[in-house]
Image (cartoon, rainbow, N blue to C red; front, side):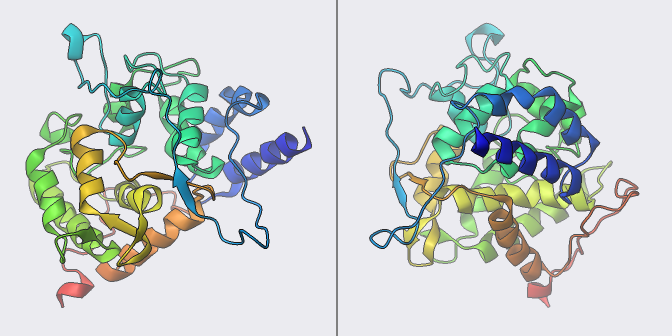
Length: 317
């Protein structure tokens, strides 16, 4: 119980002081406090080093084939009964039955437990990635997955220049755009992996495409985080030992994740929870490669139509 009280206190402080959070997330905290009251949900696996095991690793995820079997659905499957989002990770959780397979009336407790059980996301990541969507929809009970990318979610948890989805203003933005996906994998310089610099260059292309094609384009500090964190989460979640170190992102895993919306065959779950500082480190590496900075905390006038990213990147000069 002491651990839960400490976790509650830390989460409250995160909501008050984190540069990524706002009043919407504070609402989510108050509405969904019950998530932390149940020891069986929203509980990250701690890593305690020992002399025999001093460094956290990634271990194969144990999957119950009778419960978490794979069956792929798209938004509108079964005559509109099934719902999916623009986020492949959330869709994968539904395809595997870690959340309701229909994608309807998904609760924050259900989604939080799934993100921890499968990805070992840290609570701070849950608060910034999951909770705001429930907040903007004022739905503490449950939401449908296609609400992750509707009008209310724009410039909060969804925005322009997504890796493989259209901007909301340009039409259908739930299902994958294969032209954008093929563009993403084409940025691999070795044909096997994607480095943070490869991802940064793909993002910058997407930024300039959106700026050119979207008549309502704006790219605030929050929008930059919303776009770039999708790449950071790819590295932190699916990166594994390879030629680029312990967080090597392999194209074969990226293809399975985006196209099948399933766990890669070689997927291994983190022993150390994936906290925001690690995600921010990957993001800052990409930002440095492009040549701009994200202002933290976000300024009060962040949604004034600004574009924080230059059209010409540092690596192009």
